[in-house]
Length: 544
Image (cartoon, rainbow, N blue to C red):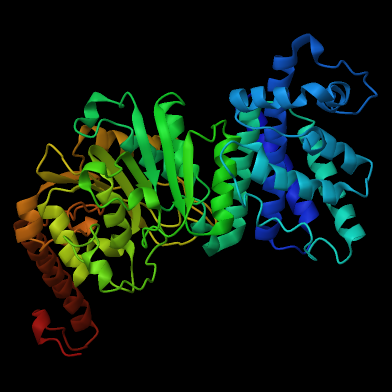
């Protein structure tokens, strides 16, 4: 697998999506396209494991026999299928019946089989309820195969699905059957669909370069970042996980053996399903992640509602890109909630600090949290100032990073990253003003690898650089700025004004005055010869 293959496959699939979706909304077509890629991935992984398990019993078919080898084995060994499936559940954690494998579905599409739509419905239902040991109920709930967007009548819908699946199968056939390649293609398509969704994209996608900054930060030793990456993160949590790309980025930084379990929470049902598919598509077993469909502000996940501090679930790393300035309706009862009672409630107009306090509550004492927020949290007054003051005095705010504008699909405003800890070794706050670090683009700016590296290394080594980063004592933040964290107060990217030498300026003006007098005298000589009145030698006596 090469990077060129990844880019080429992503572009190929995106081209297919653009050609086939027609008048269908991009978000609707996304769900079909990504679900079929997901089915292809599960099928390839399952057939590869089945072939290894059956060994010499794996049927050898001729080149013109388009049946799935596994369907042939099932037909030849009906008395052994139950035992085989038990073994497969232990080894790959799921089962897909032969009629529902991608190879079988793709062949039905190629031959325009009238039963393709019904077979897909049965296959999706089986995967949701029976494939895995743990239930993936509702995984395909947003994929309405009976939708009139595919066609008014069954035959029209079936024919449209045949065309879509056939084109995807033909596109994929040009590339090696590499599971990582398909996972990367899935991520690429999520990014492309996000770019086309504008403001709605903020619900499910964090650009990869931003994810890399957060991941690079939380995977370092929280007490001594300069010592390098932690050996292992047992639990990683994203309470607004979207499609799961940020969690997966942390996993990429640590390596698959460097993570115990990923935990995600997502309110939007469509995005929640995308996240579950994304985890599986990247080779994660269902025991290695737990994605919950629910509202983190309401704290409706049972595993997080334990009131006994001794039994509370804590996370070694917390990352999040919650919706900016989200309007919420906190109740009086919420003021007593263990997440908020020591700090106060975020205002109804902006839940930003409510999200932050939720994540901070579940952060382990030796962990690190990195959250993306709008700049308003740094300087807004009222209850937000009170929360900010409490966080600063408790030593929870470790680093404030300002990012350039137009990095996100969902907003053009510049945003910040706050790094928080429950137990840190320094009494100061590191400010990084990265507003000038970006590669300009027509619609979207981007960060280059060198930019990401500079930001993360500055955090890691707590380096001070002129017009880029500075360590600021709490006394200065309190006494000179009244707990206002507006980054430009501490690190300005503007060029310093050149100092003016007043003595030199005076001498220059005096010299000019002499030149003016001498020129006026010469000019008056000419005027006298012409019989015209002279000009006054003192400029102040001249009339307008």
